[in-house]
Structures are given as C-alpha cells and as structure tokens.
Image (cartoon, rainbow, N blue to C red; front, side, top):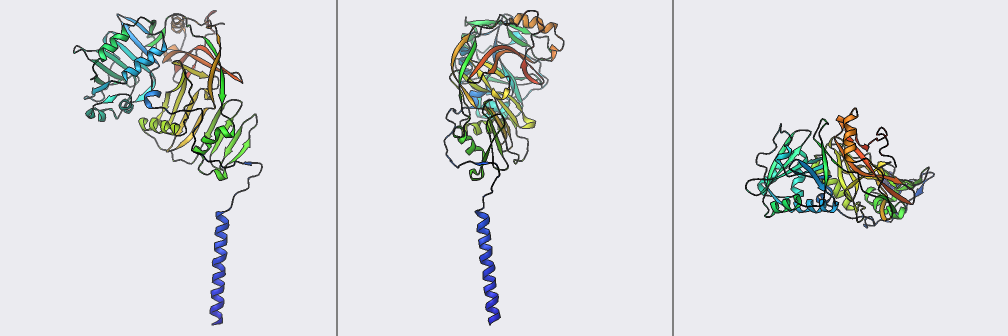
Length: 440
C-alpha cells in the first residue's frame, strides 16, 4: 500500500515538473545580445503616404504611336495619352475566336491607325482586367502575352484590336463592341497637338519610335517626404513579420536600421531612402504571369504600398516569370524614372506565395521647387543617326526619353536623359561619342 502511494506521488511530481517545464518554454523569450527589442505596436493602419491601385492603373503603354500616310506621331501633352488609354479601357471586346495565332508577321504600318507599345510582355490574362470581355471570350485569353496593341478601323465601321508579341510573333484579334469607338479613335488621330516621331527599323526586332525634335522637358528638383523611422515603417513591419514579440533591431553602418525576427530581415537605409526585405522560408514555385501580377498588386494594396504623388505613379515595367519577379517603375508625367541606384525608382517583388524579396523606395516626391531649363540633349533625329553609326545598336529593343533620379539628400532631382533597353534591361544612353552633343 505504502509502495503504491510512493509511486503515485512520484508520478504526480513528474507530471507537475513536466507542466512547469512546458509553461517555461511557452513563455521563454530569447535574449539577443547587442540588439534592441522592438516594442509591439500592432496596428492595421497602412502606410500614411500610400494608396491602392488596380491592374488598369499600373499596366499602361509607354508609347502611343499614330500612323497617317506614312508619318508617325504621338501626343505632345502626356495627359492626352492617359485620357486616350483610359477611354480605350471603357471598350467592350468580342472575338478572340481563333485564340493565339503563331508565326505572325508584324503588321505593316499602312494596315493600322495606332499602336500601343508596352515596356514588357503583358500576360494575356490581364486583357480581361484591362477591358470588358464577352463571356465566351474570357477563356480565349488565358495563355500567351503581348507587348503591342494595334488598332485599325475595318470596313464595318468598327475598331479591331491585334494583341501582338514581337518576340514570339504571336497574336490575338478582337473587335470592339462599344458604340462610338471608331469616332473616339478618329478624334485622337485628327488631334492637332502632336509631335512627330521617327520610325527606326535598323535594329533586329520591331521598329523603335523616337520623338524627332530636341526634347523640351525641364530639369526638376523636388522636396521629399521620407518614411524611414520606426514609426513610419510600423505598417510595413506588421505586414511582413508574423511575430512582433521577437522582432529586434540593429543600427547599420552608414545609417539606418535592420529589423529581424531571426529568420526574416528588413534593412531600411535611411540616407539612401530605400529598403530591402528578404524572407528565405517560402517554397519556390513558378507562378503564372497573371497570378504573379495579381498577388503582388494585392500585397501592395494591403499596406497601401503605392506611394504616388499627383503627377507620378508606379507602372508595371518588367516581369521575370522564371524568377517570380515583378518590377513596378516610378513614372513622372508618363516619362519613366531611372535611378543611379535603381532601388530608389522601382518597387521590386520576388513572390513565393508571399514576398520572398521586397525592395522599394522609402520616400515620396513632394512639391517641385526648382524648374531648371531644359538640358541640351540631342534631338531624336541625331539619336537615330548615332544608332546607325554605332556598333551593337542592333541589340537595342527600345529608346525612351526619361528622367535620371539623382539623390541630393534633402531633395531629389529628376534630370531628363535618353535611355535604351536591351537584353540586360534599361540604362542611360552613352552620348560621349556624339561630338559635342549631350553636353550641358
């Protein structure tokens, strides 16, 4: 009897000890050396400087080119380009009955009235988000991609659209069902406020369109609204870290702080005004292009990560489906912005069911307080002549007038410059060999 009582007491003691040990483990908080514990201040509030966007607002053409009797033109006022594209997005499309057609040659210029040129291959599935589609057409736009849309009026008085992939030489055709589409197209074709473009077709791919005359866009300097402090970053920390109780911070050499939960890390570079985030846990798997765009837009909307001002926005500019990587570029008045450190001009996300990497600027453009004189840049005609004489220019996919972002500490400068796109991406066009041009 006594032996049984001793066994019972011993077993009870072991159970109590086990419970105390379990409770201790549950309540254990690691003590990180040389780190500062970040107080939990969880809030559902998004970034104060941000807003939400849709696919309609971030998937936009970089150029709209009109063709009339062998001459090419585009809008002088960039607001007109925005209005034209937004008007198109009200159209209802039918057709797509033939699906994707392969081995399609680029349409001749006399076969269309206008073309929209996009800075990347847009997933075909996005067509159903950019336009209204008849129900029987939705399943026809699940595969493929496009980087140009050609518009023409047919003999029935309606507008036809050809979604074309210049690299793969594939196309899909649709017809606009909306009344007044042909009249709208004619109205913009006949608009007086246009500038002449050169069609440069000496490269290996599709023709490049370059504004003919010398650029007349000003050098701009802006005040900046930064969000680099802990209080500013709090919505991002709440969105990116699952357990704020173990989140710690460390000062970084050169300024700024790194935040980590022992697995994920966010580095906020205060002086350089950008951040880098990495989460090595998510499973790596290839995501279809349309879904990749959907997921990254939804992620940014969750914390209002689109930090736009009145005259600038972020547009979808590059996508690598193999790496699950999407880049949204800052665009000011329809001109793309390229940074000396490009992380100051792009939101770049690598997606693996959740963000694996997330790099972005930590500032928003304020008021422009200095409008410098237009710089002495070569004309488009001189750029075209230069390309004809330059070895390797056949690899260039596009030429664009844009802004070079220069960080000046308490301000940001946008300096007009010519840029080129090749297989490595976008970079400033080297004008050093153009005798006397590009100086100033």
